Image (cartoon, rainbow, N blue to C red; front, side, top):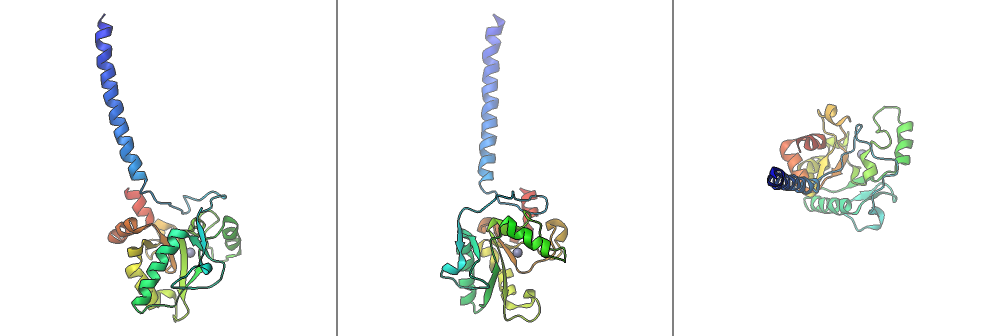
Length: 209
Ligand code: ZN
């Protein structure tokens, strides 16, 4: 008999706990929606990872130049980059040339084995396999890209269009990559703003979540 009086209490408590559990799971799920793809030496992509909506930049109406007719990017990344370079053009800063976009695992492997400096990412560890990153330069810079007005404009404004300078100076220990003034990664405006305001890398953003 006492069993019958205790059991409903226990089941009520269990139902309550279950609700709490569901509530926290729901909260987690909505946080996960703002998740971002982190690729680095510790978080490699699988060999068969392929972005599902790539566009050939050569076939697009665009506000930047291309180093080749065979450069592809994720569609949303291209659209954001195009808006960014359109605004740069309005500000009188142009002649940006995209030199690299999406790379397959196999293409990265080729570069990796060709490189004698040891700075090229191993296959799977390059953001170029995501289709969300591009390399940019200008033909009119003396010295490195970081000494150009194009670089200065990008550093100031890229976050407004959802991009981050992925491998900044003095953050090599965190990113695992030496500084690459030419490499930009699309993370969306909300995340880029947080990263910009905190002077973070993508690793620091992911750690802080
Ligand atoms: Zn790059």
